[in-house]
Image 1 (cartoon, helix red, strand yellow):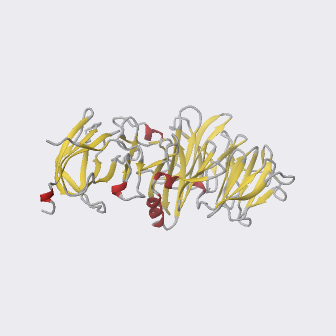
Image 2 (spheres, helix red, strand yellow; image 1 turned 90 degrees about the vertical axis):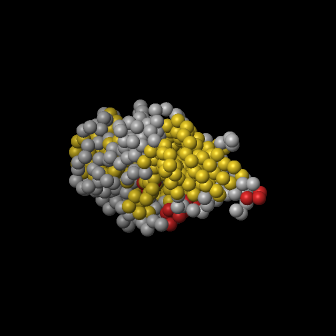
Image 3 (cartoon, rainbow, N blue to C red; image 1 turned 180 degrees about the horizontal axis):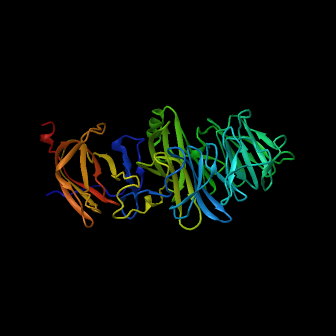
Length: 480
């Protein structure tokens, strides 16, 4: 009797798709959705996202979401596509209309107890946590983008000055000298972000860098080229400690202000990312930070294309389904909370619990069941034909609410094939603990690729290992 061979019991490398499927390195997979590596098990199904606000407001969706660290207390805000701004209570159960405003192209930002919203083609507005939204005064430009740098509010690009940045008076976002206190970049601005000692100016194909502390006039600031990498969407640009992360058609990027790293290349999904973005006509990209991961959602106009999570410490990636995020925001203070503007409702979503799955937590707040799946490498342990007799799956698939979950197993016999054959003679149904089950396969081939796909909700499914009974064909039988 043969001893089963361990095909995979380590998934910490995440998705690697830039090599042939049979050359994927140990610990990596070809694809996986709604499964997180090394979360209390080698692979674990993600938790659900929740609603963090009531419905309501003019329009049909949430366009923007922000977090205000106000003197009177921290809380969430949401902006619907009809232009209604709400302040949302800390527990997410109530909301208060804070006025009407025009639409935005980036996340709001804080400066001097004001949550500031640049509004393309209109006066920027602010919200102080207590009073209705109001126009930013003092002659503020009608800018598209903005950030807070040192003790200045910085606004960028208007209808007649596509390359320009303006600076408020120090400590006073309500007063502007737009005649003298400005700098021009080289290209039309698509976003700006503040670092500790620099401002990065994004355009479609470039990043420029401003250093110095005192804006014009009498400035010590200098501007110069930095990277030939830009972004089409300011919503993708986020701060992560001393780093900035953003995304574009060519990948996900991170910089410390000195050099840039291509995270998609480092993870091994560069070609997968390029194929995805090449299929998109009008690219929209939104990004946020959750538990040292950059979460990025890609859109083709109003069509959700994909959501990826990139571990910024390990440089690994995996995918998540059913997150229709038009903007992300992180709540500060106490427990980390990460919110998103929901394209499918007038409510704010919260993805914090993706990393805290629990039995019974089997569907997202919109009712969509979480059904994780993973495509494993193509295994060819030796040359020549082999007899694959049995597959062994070690997993824990709980049944939280009589949902009858099943972890289906399917196979391909060629590394190029995407047409899987399901194994149905024995099913991997619900369990009460870690369980190892034998599933007959009875296939004769040089190698094998496997896929595990859950049907129905289980809540925090755990996958520990996949093994196989495999025997090399005798030399005299090769070709038979």
